[in-house]
Image 1: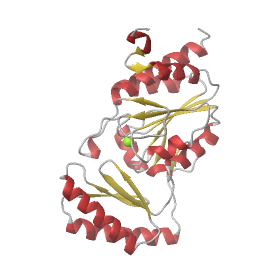
Image 2 (image 1 turned 90 degrees about the vertical axis):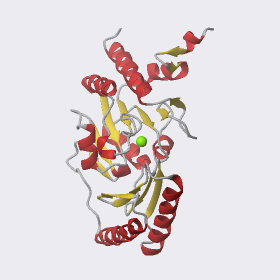
Image 3 (image 1 turned 120 degrees about the vertical axis):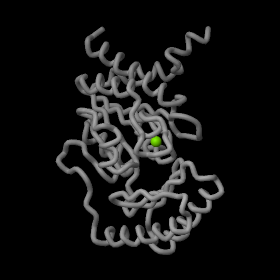
Image 4 (image 1 turned 45 degrees about the vertical axis):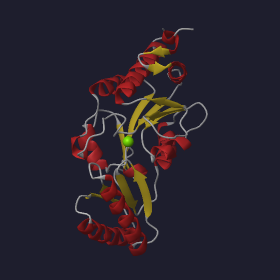
Length: 269
Ligand SMILES: [Mg+2]
């Protein structure tokens, strides 16, 4: 068999086969991480924008019956709305599954008094940390604080992350720690992207789901998938996902193939 029999549009043959099967499910939910999946990674998080080919494929998918698209991000819901441009009819999940805008009238989140108190203490502890590591940057989220070290030299980044872990563990015990690509995040709500997938499966009555992600926190989402679902790791790194693509251009191709297969299936072609 020649190489061309295995590869179409740069996508591996087994992934193309799996997409073809997924396209035939009655109620399809396509859930996608944003940074590193829809949008190329950039130094300044506010500059991230979705790949135009992916956005076009998403617009095609949401036009199809029995098809839901959701962005599932570690960003706060507000921030995700801004950088994603809130594509029409696309559901949004922010803060790793702690915030939802999925059309059920329960957008955002409400913290308990205890969580609010912990958040205030966490914010104070993190301000102390960046006063000792001025190259690191803080991002305040509704349920936590993220330490960003992208672009910081590796030794300084490690020192800042170590300091943050120790300081937060001592000051606010019980806070959830999540590490990702050049980020260390602390949250007073222990939600994961796996929780998000379970809620989305029920909310959308999905008969099959696709999840694509590039980072460590996406592994929770992969692990929450069930037989018949499709998990796609984007980029390098160990993963429990069953398929892998190189980067954001291949994600765009994958979404284009899925939209096309599903349209053909629904038209009875
Ligand atoms: Mg990501």
